[in-house]
Length: 112
Image 1 (cartoon, one colour):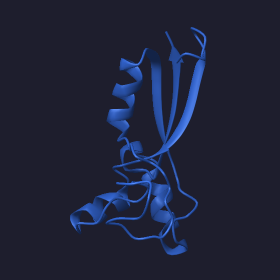
Image 2 (cartoon, rainbow, N blue to C red):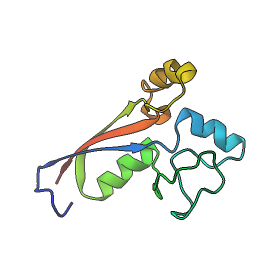
Image 3 (cartoon, rainbow, N blue to C red):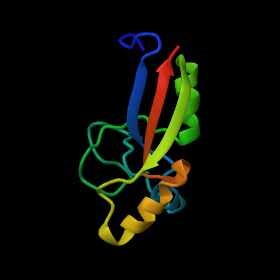
């Protein structure tokens, strides 16, 4: 907010905590994809690469956070993730119709 002038546009993308596959992982007791409990290593989830997201948002939480941070006209859309295995890509694209279930959240907002 400090570097964006009043009326300026913010555009960001972030992984969705409530992505369709994260919901399934949580039911299985597995740490959601893209989330980290530490920047020093992988704990509780598949993969071998630290992705560095210590905060993940749902669509509702991201909208609320941006509004509370002084942004207006907040819109949230869904986007697919390029790393989804080929057999699941159609499902990933379909989930974009409901931002709350999409892999990636795309946000656009204006600073007050």
